[in-house]
Amino acid sequence: MKEVMESIFSRISSPLFGYFFFAFIAFNWEEIFYLFASKLSAEMRIEYFNEHTGFDSLFFFPLMLAFLYSFLYPWIHYVFLGISKIPTDLKNSLQADSESKLILEKQKFESANAKLLATLEEGLIDRAKREVEINKIEDEDIKEKLKAEVEGVRVRSATPVEIAEKRAISVLSDEEDQLIKDLTKAEGRCSMKAIIEGSKFGAVKIRHLIEQLAAEGYVRHNSSGELLFTEKGNAYAVERGYAV
Image (cartoon, rainbow, N blue to C red; front, top):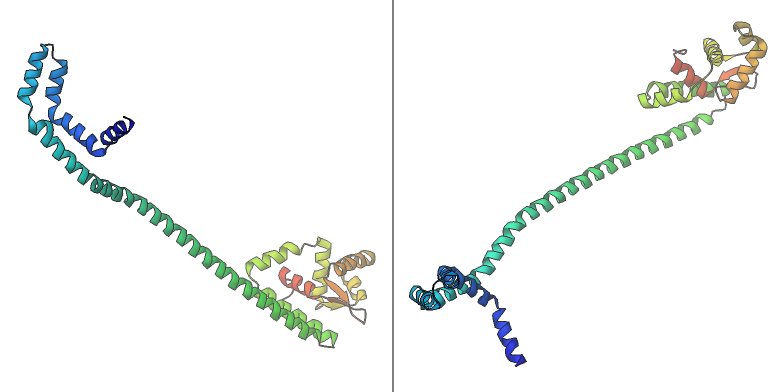
C-alpha cells in the first residue's frame, strides 16, 4: 500500500501533471464553476457539464498544452536567464573597467613617484660628490668662496617649494639679521674689530650675536680670527637679497 501511495504521489507531483491540471481548469473553468456554484439540481448541473464538455476539452487540449509547455518551459527559462544576465554583465563590466582604470592610474602615479625619487636621489648623490671635491681644496679662502658661489647657484635655481622651505627654516631675529646684513656689506668676511666699529650695536652684544649665529651655523672664524660666512650664511644673505 505504501508503495502504491508513493507511486501515486510521485505522478501527482510531476510537473506534467501540474501543467495538465492548470490547462484542464483553463479550458473548462466555466463548466466547472457552473457545476459547483449553480443552485439548480445536481442532475441539471451534470447534464449541463456533459453537454458543454467533451474528450477534446477534458483531455486532448489540456494534455497537448501540458506537453507544449513542458517542452517550451526550459527554453523560456533559458531566455529569461539570458535577458536577466545582461544587466549583471554590464554592471560587472563597468565595475571591472573602473577598477582597471584605478589600478592603471595608481601604477602611473607610482611610476612617476619612483622616477621623481630616483631623480632626487641622483641629485643628492651628485651634490655630495661635489661637496667632497670642494672639501679637497686646501686653501680655505678659495674653498669658502667656491662654496658661496655654488650655494648662490643653488639658491637661484631652487624651486618655489624649496625656497619656501628654506625661508621657513631661516628665521633669525632682527638683530641677527642686521649683523648678517653688515657682514654681507664687508663681502662676507671681516675682522671682529671692523664689525664692532661698523655696527650700531655694542661690542658685548655683537659678540653675543656672533656666538648665536655661529651656533646656528651661519658664520665661523678662520685661522686668522676673521669672521666668515658659512654656506648657510651665504645662502641666507642671497635669500634675503643682501648679496647681489
